[in-house]
Length: 404
Image (cartoon, rainbow, N blue to C red; front, side, top):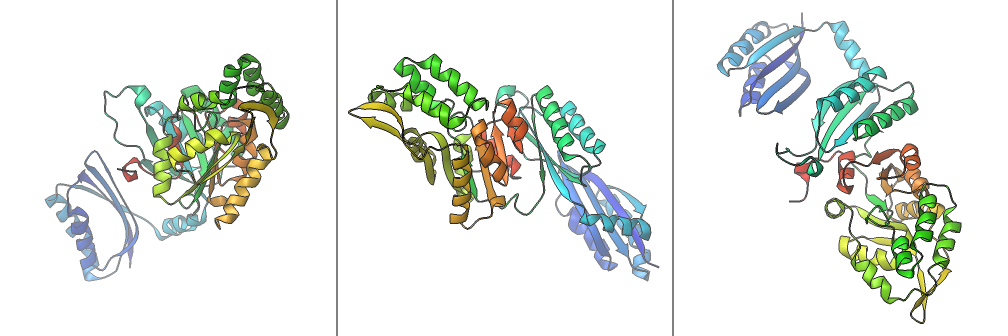
């Protein structure tokens, strides 16, 4: 009669160990039902589920494996599995899978405990845990750290909205980011990424900087803040702010453009997206004058933003149609996806303001980046702890896979 046995091997990792173990099993013509291996700090954990045939060679395979493990200075444990238990395991392979991603400056046991407790409470079983971030030196200042742990979980939460709300609450409490997304073929097969510009790709709201130069900084900043929180209609607020810039000399634009700073992680993210074959775009309620500068610096494929009308060397304060507002951003995302022959599931959208929400909701992966509370609560995912390159972790990429 055939046997089903789970074999667990642990010990110091060394070359040739897997070949030696499977060599013993091969001699007995054993079938492999499941297999997994992990190495943490040079310590191996190797699990293999096997079906042992009812033959003479099969009857001695466990004894032979025990002897081989002893020679290799490994510990081995055998656990019999009934056919009923195996059938139950097989029946679970159709269950949906999700990815929970923890992003933080420094990974702590409390963070892992809180995340794993929430997943268990909502009936999700953790299958795999992987570290996507690089190895972190002990003396590295916390503000320079970058940690990411990915959990692959099985099952379907009874109340996904409540699960997301609890993850968001814990993320705010512990100053981390927690992403929850369905694990599909599109997660690592996205090919178009679109970005808001102001306070997303750059660490400023350009219209506020223009307003300071025009002497109306406080008035415009107050309107901008309310618009980004979703308290004002974007089109109306944009026209109101732009009108206050009337008479600003064109010479002020170059000076402001030279002082704009890229957001943390922007250059790494775009270098990696380009290497991976992504098309990229700026979809901004800001101005094309500054967006073109970023296009040159980061190698961005498409730019859609608002024109800053200048007559006789001065800003007119008149809005030029079409204004890139919330709906226009979503429409442009759909148009670009169609132009590139992509499904919307293959797109990424990143922004920080309420006027970004329609495109964040339309994209396969919508990320609220360092966003206002309303936007974080409404978006599919949010990143506030790390830089823009943290988006790569949501795609499942590891630091060691990055640009040299």
